[in-house]
Image (tube, rainbow, N blue to C red; front, top):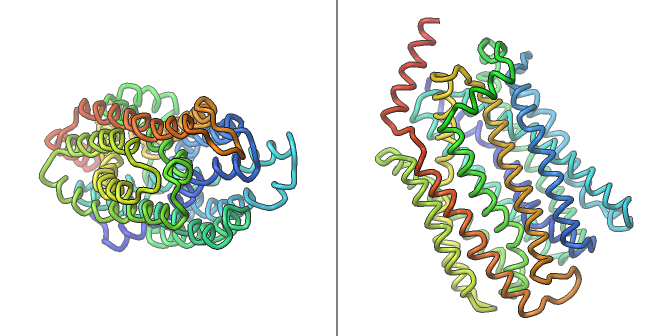
Amino acid sequence: MAIARWRECGYAAAEGGLSATETFIRLHFLFYLTNELLLPPALAGLLVSMGILWDGVIDPIAGWLSDRTRSRWGRRTPYLLVGLVLLPLLLASLFLPQLKAMEGLSRNFAVGGLYLLLNTAMTLIGVPHAALGGDLSRDEKSRTRIFAWRYFFTTIGLLTGIAAPGFFLSRHGNSWEAYFHSALALGAFVVLTTLATVISSARVDREMNGESHAAQQHPLVMLRGLWKNRPFLILISAFILATIGQAINSSLALYYYRLYLKLDEKAIEQVLVLFTLIIIASIIGWNLLSRRFEKTKLLAWGVGLMGVSGAIAYPLFPPGDMQGPLAMAVIGGLLLGSVFLLEVMVTDAVDYGAVTTGSADYGSYFGIWKLGTKIARAIAIGLSGFLLHAIGFVSGKEPTTETLKGLALLFGPGVGLFFIGGALLVLYYPLNQRKITQIQRILHRNKTVS
C-alpha cells in the first residue's frame, strides 16, 4: 500500500535526532576522551568499541521484541517513547564536569557505564524505527521515497551533529562546556524529531497489531532463514565493510583536519557542512536514477568511486589547504548520497526471505542489520585507537612529522580500501528489478489468499 507523503516524511524524522547524536559521538567522543579526559588512545578506543559492541548485541533483541509487542500504542511506538526520554539525559551525562574531576578506574567505569546506557537508548529508537519503515508500505515506489526521506533526515542529523558542536566549540574552545552544551542541544533535537515520527506513524503502527506471522516464529527459525537469505548476507557483508571505512573516517576526521591540515574550527565546520549539504542535494538525483537503472550498479559505482577518490586525494593535500578538502566535500557528498539505496535493498531482501524461507520479521532483520553496523563501528573505533598508537600519537603532546604522515595515509587509502571492498561485494547482489516485482506479486497473492 502507498501512504500519504506527509506520513513518509514524518516517519523519517526520528532518524534526524539519532543521526545527529551518532555524528556528534563519532566525531568528538574519542577526541574528547583523549584530549579532555586525557585517556590513552588505545584505552579510549577500547571503551568506545565495548559500548558499541554492547549496542550491537542488544539490537537483534530489540528487533525481536518489537516484532512481538502488542500494545494500545502499536508495536514500535512504545520503544520510541522510552528512547526519546532516556537518550537526551544520558547524552548530557557523558559530558558532566564531574567526570573530568574523577580519576583512575572510577572514571573509566563511569564513562564506560554511561556510554553503554547511551547506546541502549539509541537502540530503543533506532531498531524499531528502521523496522517501522518496512511496515509502512510494500509498494516499491513508496518504499524508495520512504527510505529517501529517511536518508534525507540522516543527513539533516549529520549536519546538525556537525553544526551544533561547531557553534559551541567556536565560543568555548575545546572544553567540556562546549561538549556539554552541544549534548543538551542535540538531546532537545532528539525529542522533537522522535515525537514527529510518533505522531505521524502511530496510527499505522497500531494497525500492525493485527499482523500475526511474526509472533509465530521462533528466533532460531528466523536465524536459520536469515542464514539462507543470500541477498541479505551479501548486503550486510558489503555494509559492514563500508561502515568500517566510514567509522574510521569519522573517528580520525578531527585529527586529520586539526592536526594534519591545521585548519581551525570554522574551516573544519565549512568542509563538513558543505559535505552534508551536497549529500542532501544528491539524494534527489540518486532517487531519480534508481527509477531507470538497477540500484545495485548505482550503489556499487557511488561507494566504489568514493573509496578511490578519497584514497588518492587526502594524502596529497598540503597543510593549510582549503580548496582540496572543499572539492572532496563536493565529490564525496555526491557519491555518498547513493548509500540510501542500501536500506531499500534490505527491505527487498527481507521480502525475498518471506517467499523463500518464510522468515519475514522486519524488526529481527533490521536488528541483525544494526548489529552488523555496531560490530563494524566497534572494530573501526577500536582499530582507530590502536592505529593512532601505532603511528606514534600521544595524548596531550604535539604529533611528529612521521605521525602526521601516518595520519594522512590512514584517512586516505586506509579508509578508501574498505569502501572499495564494499562496492565490489554489492555487485554480487542477485535481486534485480524484475525479480523484486515477482516477489511482490507472490507476497500480495499470499496475503490475499490468507
